Length: 467
Figure 1 (cartoon, one colour):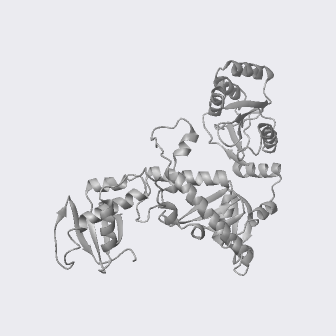
Figure 2 (cartoon, rainbow, N blue to C red; figure 1 turned 135 degrees about the vertical axis):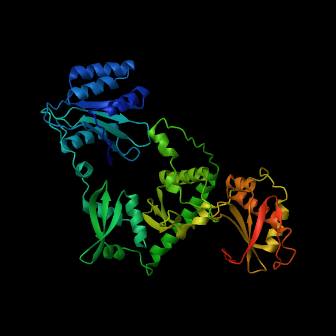
């Protein structure tokens, strides 16, 4: 159960009335029930819903009429708007209705007028609760520590205790402390390391509220040790299965072509689907960041394996925000892995796209380029120079030095607009063959100066890539 209090608004307004009533008019929501509301008003509201009239103005007017302070309070944030959401269909609308009524009682809003709307416009069943903070005496109900109080109320209704939550996270198998923290994150907790009296432990928060604490010594005792051969063999077999799964869905993700609209989203859910900021730190082997379409493809992969197979992927970033690794939590077998134990990060990002036989397009001269590169070149990479230009770095097989060629603007654009890793590799080989045809045959100690279609080269004695 996820409990979320939506943003407060000033001026004594109730914009949640328009939000929920518009959803009812669109046919993606319904008014489940209301408490402490005049029967005559509810009868009028039902008629408007049947006829298809937007009743947002009437609901907001009713809430304002029942939020008069009589000078007993200066509160301007009068609206109380909460969302109760479950994973997919864990609760139906009647179970959510019962939960909402108990929740309002525990939060001190049991005697307030409130409306409960059931929404079915997303994959997860959820209800919106609209009420007022001003009671019948004109005094505002305190909203201090609301997030913490709401989480405690939800846990109490569901019968969730710290001991049960500790048992839940420890029911997973893990080898390292980092894997255990990924398990906690998959279970909806935000771990924070703390030290008290020399004892190191983690406090696990949910909705900014501390739920329970676990010492690092206890975590280490629960790790799978190297001498547990049976458990290690099971992990090894599952890792092979997960590798095949990731490669399969990665191939499918490369077939996804997204149109990234930069305009205003019609709905908040549409805006969330377009966000890829969490994947902005993903880079290719050559250091170039993923394009917007590539990030959307990777987001599709993460979403698919989570929804269909119960596999969570957690990205690990350095202090500069660059993704250096990832972790996997397999909920099916309750096992946590380091990503490198399953499929290394470069293998996940730059997996070559399979081309169906007879349908692939041949690149002119690509076969000759491949043979030329294979004979003379050790490695090729493209990176961005500090002056803002992109350059091609080529390392030779028979010389302990590399050469750097600044690409033309047209070549840079072609490379950045490449659809996938296969096309990028072909372009790198094409650029290398183009610039090296006149270089490899002569002595590398000569001081040459030449240009080929605005591409200039210079020597670089430091090799950045290993043989």
